[in-house]
Image (cartoon, rainbow, N blue to C red; front, side, top):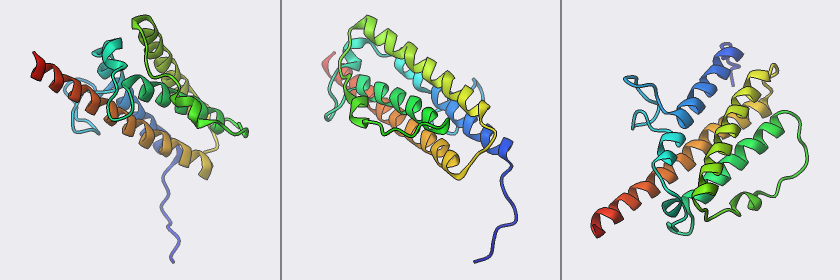
Length: 166
């Protein structure tokens, strides 16, 4: 197999990953295209339109709250691994929060934002993008996109239920 001679420059890779994560959480800037089909939607806009009751409603075995807490947990742990953590993680712990009241829901959204901002700072601190770190960064993008999509589908299911009942 022929060795590739062109390689992605580290700053280009780091900015591309940061761009997609930014859009995943903050949504695309108004009037601009999107890496997602729906422009302008991200975690924060999506969750901001959901109350605690809706966030705690079971959808096919899970809740918006559980997906949100899990996505936050994942960001936190992957940043720790990127910065040298070696201890194992009990990933089941990330699914323990399923229901919340309004105060808990607001707090979870705030801590998700903090985790996202910490992740962006984590990326900015990395000088040596090893194969493992590249894999973890791509994993964060894919994982975040998956859970954003799951939550968006749950909110649509909730909207459909409201329309049918009301």
